[in-house]
Image 1 (cartoon, rainbow, N blue to C red):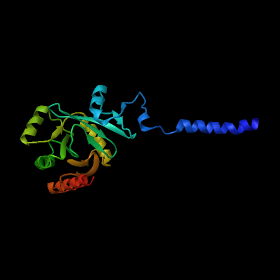
Image 2 (image 1 turned 120 degrees about the vertical axis):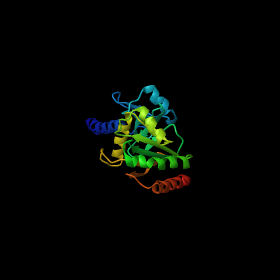
Image 3 (image 1 turned 180 degrees about the vertical axis):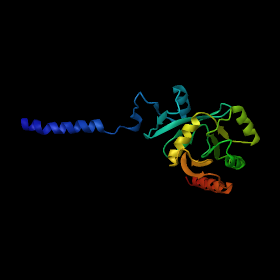
Image 4 (image 1 turned 45 degrees about the vertical axis):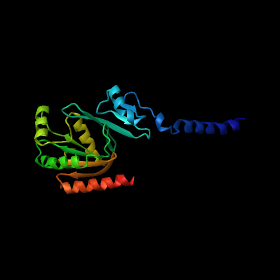
Length: 223
């Protein structure tokens, strides 16, 4: 009888360990109460979830696949908002149905950045059906009134984000691209359906950006 007990005890312990460590379905993942995380069950309800929970820039969601995505809320001088979810390699902007996104990190005092604005205006017009462009101000203390004047002067036809969350987003993008936090601007990134596609450090010819946009459209057509 003792021999049976000696044999069964390790087996029972092994079964107990397997039960405790067994991977649960992603939908059952729980987050410690001390974090700012929420469980994402339906991406269509993300905006409502964020609003109801007053999520901060340091908040994050857990997708059904178990992937962690940080949440950043961008806003312009007209109090229009866009919510961004950001992982290590992906960036998705909600409130827009456009499959291609350009993030243009710039400052109003940056001469090369200003030089790219007319090109971005043209691209936003030419690819209006597929493209969403957002300018993200960084290291720029321009007040909202002066920013409105700057936007009008340069006839900017795309979204410009000016809030405290910009720095948070830019730091995460620098990490994504393995850049130092004090990188040179302008910095321009292209995402296709939320997936990183390419980026440009400094000023580049508009023909290069347009070529990549055409490649991105071809990629979408093949999917």
